[in-house]
View (cartoon, rainbow, N blue to C red):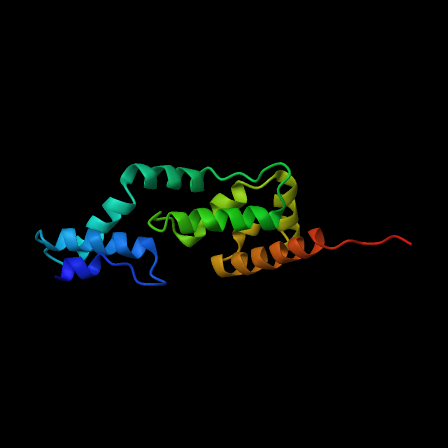
Length: 148
């Protein structure tokens, strides 16, 4: 009876929720030792090692495109991190990967804005500086300046 009722889709319930429920019900018929076991099975099913390895490679080999603004590069890098929540990179390593993937001109902007080396800052300082510069870049790239 429960499985029949579970198969009906209620208004506003996404298709993914039904698939996840079916997956969980299938798992419950087997043995699970702990919450960690459930998490491992979930990750293996929906985030296989080969996909995770590719996403980790995308993060570690990040490069700013030639015509890409700093703001767009930063947004793209953050999306890569979100796609691969189990990447295992520490915050300071993430900052290094992003910085090292920037165009030389953009790196110089960061170094000039920090009176030396951007990577010499703590993670929190670097993150704050990066956010400020990226937001300024976004504002400037979306502002049309009229010349009189």
